[in-house]
Image (cartoon, rainbow, N blue to C red; front, side):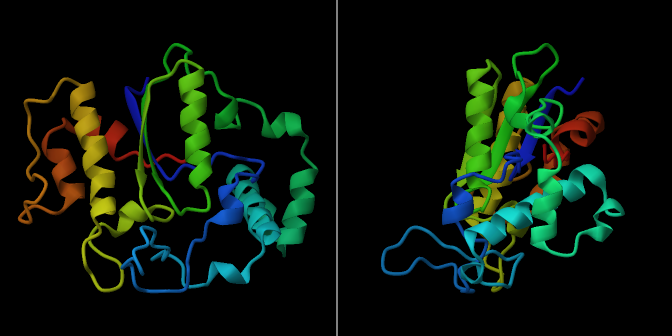
Length: 232
């Protein structure tokens, strides 16, 4: 069985009705990550060039459903779906019993069951799916599981992939923390606190979190746990 799971930007609300689908943007249309006029939030997503204000909440939800259909039924099955409205219709053909099945929907699982490992969730505050992560963490807590959660302020979906910079190449502190915090949690979980990372906060000589992660775990732990990028 798995000993631990690290989840980055989990997408788990199969109904695509999370409030953040209506309020958050993948991209605010700006390449500048610097907060304006004292604002704390930054909206740009390095992975997307389109402006999210060009899409309606309904279009976002249909696109979300399209993604889940592809995850569950595969690319070949998706060939007949040509638009978000087609995806909405195909989605509706499956009963709510399917979409709420604990084997399908992580928000309906019992995380107190034997064999369910401790979980660390990393999510971006401005991700479309930000509330998915919050709902998942609450579900795990309420059902008696073990979980910790780091939210990157002003960050987007899978923001940790741009730890070395977005656009201008300036390192993003929140993205670097998305690697460092789970690493620290895993060391504590496996009683490896005495083993230090190859770098510390503020040490610019070892900024490659991907490389550093393998320095303090055995290969079996790294391959099965830390490097597992799991979207439930």
